[in-house]
Length: 306
Image 1 (cartoon, rainbow, N blue to C red):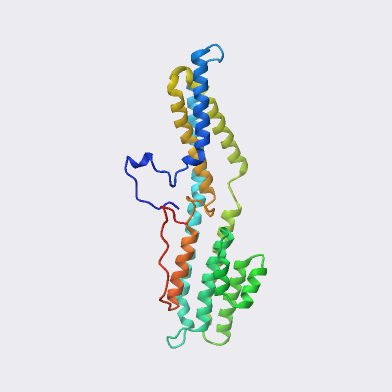
Image 2: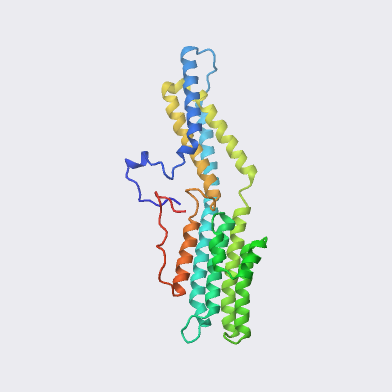
């Protein structure tokens, strides 16, 4: 996610980090070059190409812009839903850290609570690994007991293994009489919320916007931008390359931005900072366990928070 102060007017034209201009630059160059070729033909050999009226074509551009806006709204809704899901994950982890104090005895940190919160940290890293694979495995193995870690490595659904381990901790505490049934139910509800978080993330990741919808938009946008020089070269002259490149920047840019927002867990600059959110959960729960030698909270590097 891009994290930076709001730029001044002069800075707006020179910001590259977080912009999609580099991704669409080949397309913009192609449209501008095509426009220059078409204008040259209209200037030197006016009979080689037919003349088109740009009025209806401009109306099509307005319609296409509205269509792009609808798609971008759908993509942003996926991005925002994913952010709400991870916000719920952080809230659940904090609630579990507070409520699990009922497992302690006489104010001393109990082994059950320590295992429960360490499993919660491991669960956050396991969910991150499922959504955005990286080097989370050493930290996960460090937090889990050896039998749980072995089951984690062999499972088709590793985060669920950790939730089952958390459930067993609560069941054992209930069986030993260290918590009452109502307290068990309160803690159990939090574990269910963790499971709901995973299900929501899987729904977002595995259910993209229908391909036919995206394909139709791509074809229409590309066709519009590639035909635009033929409609305006006769009236705009040598201003056509600039005008068509500017229009292509808007259309291709919205299209590319929609593609990035559609994948909120992808390792790209405009995706969600789920690595940073996981680190925040890790730090806060370790602090709840009484540790003081903790790393600093994650910050953006070159305006990018991953």
